[in-house]
Length: 199
Image (cartoon, rainbow, N blue to C red; front, top):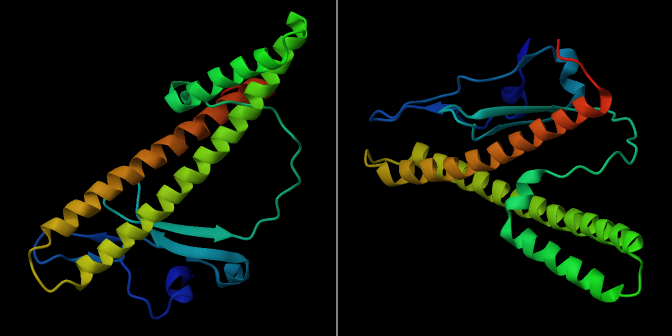
């Protein structure tokens, strides 16, 4: 068995935990041990800020051939319904659709409205996902930079750096909570679609 992170980064100094005591103690307590035969299917192995813990996350990605997916069903994360910017866009889309289809019969108009709401929702959620992904990436980079500063500092007064790390980790936890809620929603939708039973 080999320590894959150390194999990928033989000369890098990085840690997965540090103490709150003075002087600060740094350790790499968390790691993946894998068989050497798996090395050729490793995609990436990284140490990233953790979620609701004082330990960092060790991420290991393997090459995986994904089967081609079909179009699937349109599902909406209903938490978006509380987003005021989304509400404004949907209201405006409905008004525009009604204005542009004055002569349509009610059934046709309703179908057009539903289609336009779906398209607007897909565009908006795609935009929000990109925005959230950028915030997540930037926050992780900031945390990594701050943790590096914390490790390299020669003074015992590291309170400002530690407070900034705590603040950034709270932001990251919020992003991960949103991701987790989305996973739960999709799991429930799959359960309903396939009539799966709890075991």
